[in-house]
Length: 249
Image (cartoon, rainbow, N blue to C red; front, side):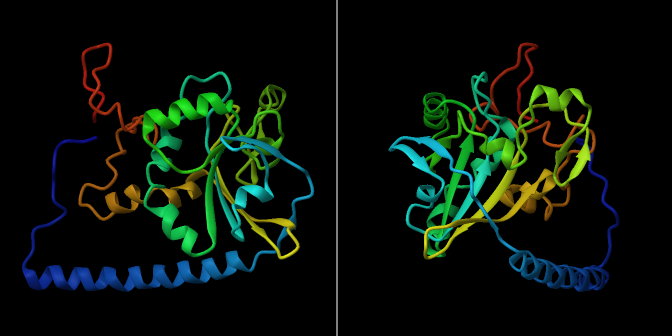
């Protein structure tokens, strides 16, 4: 993050209002476009989920339909937590930190939010307690759920140099990837896949970024090696690294 502050310009109140109103026109146009895209998203066709998945949960084995918890819609965070890892991905954890206030309100609109990872349930539960989270989080261990929904790639797939991620063929360096998938259940109990998003599409779950975008210094990632380099698990921002530097940036 660049610590120096150089204002774009210093102007009078009248000039500031003129610039702000000009930007407001573009903001309103963006809002209209977002509404249009949201409508187009809802108009996407549905795809029947025909495969049976069995997830390990604190309440025992549950099917995908049972993860809805009696509601009609299911919102899944594909949380990167591989079986051999000691903790969940820090960027996925950043996403999950935003769930606490959302789950209650989502439930009022007939939506259940669930995180799904490949890690064993026992490891998920330990990390979940450490982070102080209460949202549902289940294990897809032993299933092809992550692979089927584009967030897991076998070593063989990676060795070919390109994988299908975010609807394009592209290089990828890790077996696990972030994503969000949405499902709906009809009156007969059938489950349909209605939408998935990956890459920067998952920022919809990170409203901290939206707030930073309002601020004069923005996200401050311009000098970082990669986006989200600055992010830590929320209990590690004040820890000291091995070189004596505070992890907080």
